Image (cartoon, rainbow, N blue to C red; front, side, top):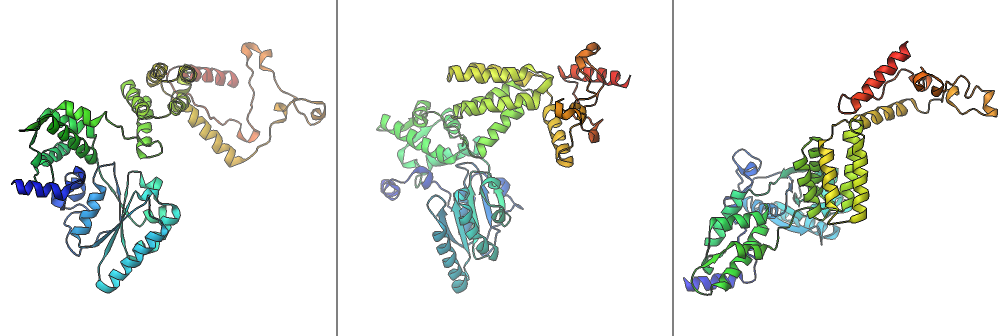
Length: 441
């Protein structure tokens, strides 16, 4: 057994635990049941079977690269791997040319795996189009970003988008258990032990990322082994905390996770949930989001989703902007949190955007309709044209109101602003009804 342990260590020296534990068969793959279960798109893989070109879309550590490798092995196809970070059009064309040779000479299919395909330029992606369409290669692209944002439409239409999910806590715990006992590829030869509480700590630090999980486990096991040179070394939560060095939050300021968290933040405020709104706000800040970006979204929200239901909301949002610019972080989180909870609990109305959209449609439909002469400024030259003639000055009348039409003649009677019954906007509704009654009289 010692000889086996030594040979295993020698074979894997310097190789990260995540690479050593990478599944060798589909059966070893943990997670993604929605893709591999019977009747699903990637079930019943067998030599000679064909699959459509795929875009594997999922968070880091969900198994995109592993799945691509396993597909190549299961289908007995030649797997050619390129990274969009360092491959160009030249490398793509070379890979396609060799794929054509294999097809013509040996009737062998080629899976062309492109990691981080969203980083390919439009030119690079366009270079793939004819070869994917003709079947010279079966494309398997991997991306952490929404393919709709990073893959050109023409290429996307020729591929099936497959969504990989982050691994669940149960699945991650299974990976830990496997690695700890595996004597050939894992930590079995190190004689380490781990309890459920520590496993849970590692799983939490991984945040759904199998690669990070293995990294934390590998370092924690090494720390435990150093602390206990002889006998069984017990991995503790302290070892895990030291190995993890704080949990990194997945958040790309220009990527899919960015848009996901921002969307959740806005929808939580719109749904009047201050707890969720503050949580998502904190997620953005802790991940390093620009404070002004969060505040801009709040100012927009104050008009788009609250509006005249609570006119004070816009005042609160702009005051938070001014306060945060004055004090900065970390103290700026206080006025920011105050404003977020206010906006979340404010009565809601979307009539600002609805009214503007309706007005914009009218302008686009009818173009530049003439300004009624009575509404034009009165001047010496304009008097002959009737400019300003017949205009009724509201302050000369009781209640500072006089029945009058202010829209272009073609649009008289059109209603654009229909106040809701929410919050202060109910007062606007009452006021409009009062004006309509006076105008009718």
